[in-house]
Image 1 (spheres, rainbow, N blue to C red):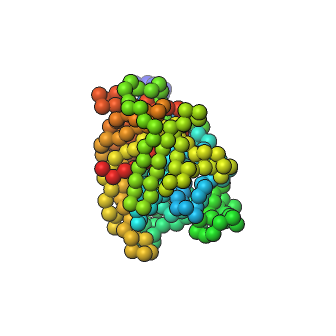
Image 2: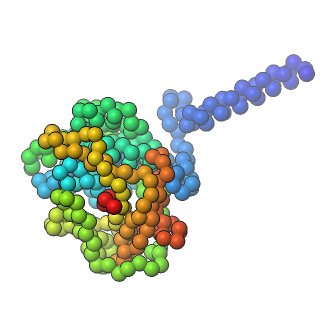
Image 3: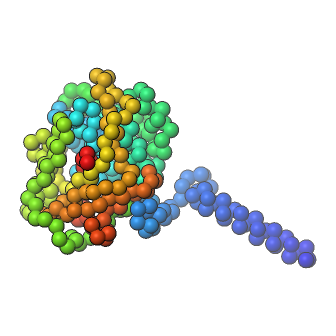
Length: 321
């Protein structure tokens, strides 16, 4: 083989290795920053733009209400915590409100739940001391107050601590994608599926908390009430969701507990089970499946078709089966 031909062949092989290396590294730019890519949505095998996700752990006891910025979340997750109370994990990607809160502590269950979002940023006030190393090792960008820019968190003067810690989201997630986190997680949006049972209201009960959802034809939303009181935004508007999913899961004790010795429940979000989907004044039976922690959660009708959600905010309420 002539020398020039050998040189051209060697150069081609070298270029191939460079191309493969760039692909394996996530196509990073010359400064090491991630370049825009199209990631596979695990639950649907569909290709969607990468979502830059911010998840904020929000307080949900009476002194912490009303919440700020919750109505701007793509997904609102409701979880059971110690003593039968509840906490909220709000997930943002398509838009960021100026302020979110009040911010409270993280739980072990949050780490498994958030793995479907490809290393999201997790904002929280702190955690049980033995849980902190677990959070550090998890595939999340953990940003408690001690790791955030100095003006990212602030204390409000209109309520007592610890229910007065708030976050300025743009200080911790400067690069928003505009992609709906629900779409990235594999949720399907579209026309209402056939069937369903006409339903005016539905209630989910925890040992020391309850959530009621009432259909409002005027607002085309399921209005939220917590512990018997209608929920409102900080601006005084009714808090409502286009779709509410009651997802029945296994809830078991974890190895962590709070300062009073109450064991922290662990909500298992990997696996499969049944769900009830509320949308457009009807309740639809559904099934859910999440094969691995890196997968999104697929919701289907009993006959196996994708369960389409109504466009707008989605609430996922975890209930023990």
